[in-house]
Image (cartoon, rainbow, N blue to C red; front, side, top):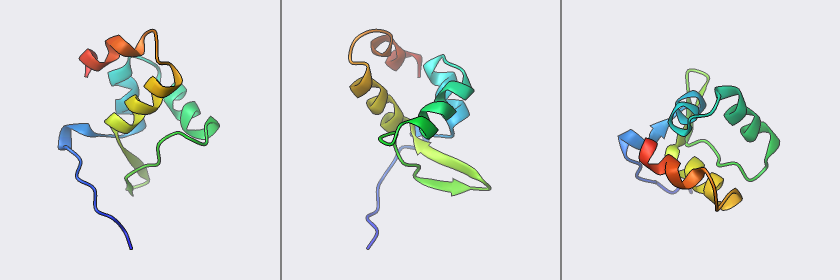
Length: 77
């Protein structure tokens, strides 16, 4: 049984958009997705694009790097 999850439209991103919001390269965010088993799972895939909740990616990054740049990234959304 699949559980439904509500996500704000403004929170829906592909990895390139997540990278833009975070101020890092798209290749870095793609590397995180391949390198770290605990990287958030995509919500779905559309036309070969994986779709994520930006809040999931930001939360993952904050758990990995609780101090430093991430704190100021929230306002860059």
